[in-house]
Length: 234
Image (cartoon, rainbow, N blue to C red; front, side):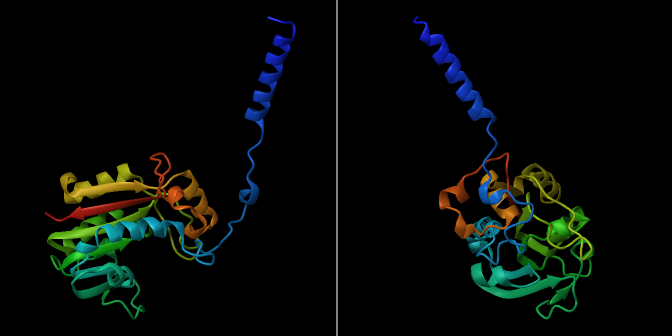
């Protein structure tokens, strides 16, 4: 060993330590306010829609017969196949598209065993008694009927706190228990979607058009953005 080698080794070690302790380069992300205050709609399509719409497209053959959706029949019209009747449920009686007015957590007035499919996207986080809402979703379906639900794992609040409550965020494990307790664990399929990049992009208001397909499709179970649930009534 030459006399220079220990010095080179020390120099390399110092360089490595500097790289490891260098502050992260946030660039445009180093901000305390989001890029968009509207989930990214003003920049394109919100990132969570990528996973919601991919899930519904995969199960479009089950959006059939008499279909129920919340607030508007957006996905029934877009993904439905052989839909014989489209209904909309909303807690707001002023919604002109609502054919049924009810709180899903107290929906005993709604018809039982009536629907072949219930498309329930990004709604359960707004209902405090989420277990009651899932029981009522089960009650609304005909035997063999399918519930297609999505819930956020990561998201900004849907509304300002003084305007309306936003209660929950969900994990795949929580969904397996919540829906499995009602539909039966063998009749529930739960899947998490997303990664740390898509979570960061969604929270800051980036649009999915600003991400690469490979970035959107990457899955990291430690960083779910969204959870999808397919449940069948026995």
